[in-house]
Image (cartoon, rainbow, N blue to C red; front, side):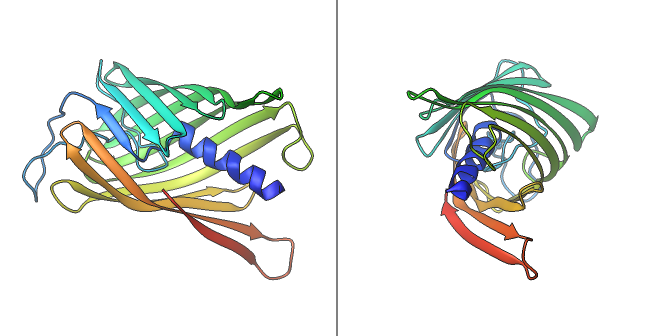
Length: 242
């Protein structure tokens, strides 16, 4: 039961803040050169499947995403380097966030984000408040890139959730990469490790550009629990469809 609750929290934290599968993006086309393929701009460059790149939306651009029907996220470019977002879910989630892009060079960006809100709110007065931040560095362009990131989060609940406590901290490190395979197809691979709970997650899948301003993403989410309390490593692993 404890693992099921922690898993739900991990999944929501990843989805509501950084991840986006079935992405529907309303955005001005962004001019970008593609060496090997006929030019077709990548409309969804700010996120992978679960995690975030350092890129932000252009000024006045809008991004709308939906994940498994339960999760929705809307983002708006305040400036070319600042994006604000609002994530909502059918389990009462309501999280606001902001991301700032720092331009280190043409193909090297740094991003810093902060989030606050509630990730669960159900009629029985069961509420989980959530806040946290991330920093990430992205090398590459909108088509082909790799991102390294760090995150730290805090949650406080109205009921006991982890180790009979009402509050807990989460920290993670992640790496994500995107490779263009064709004019409309991108391969996505991600790895996310929650070091204070020995949980390894991530995603492997593809994104397909189906219109100039719309993409569809799908794949699987590996999840493994590592138990260091015994002499030999005990790994419980499974994969969840995305």
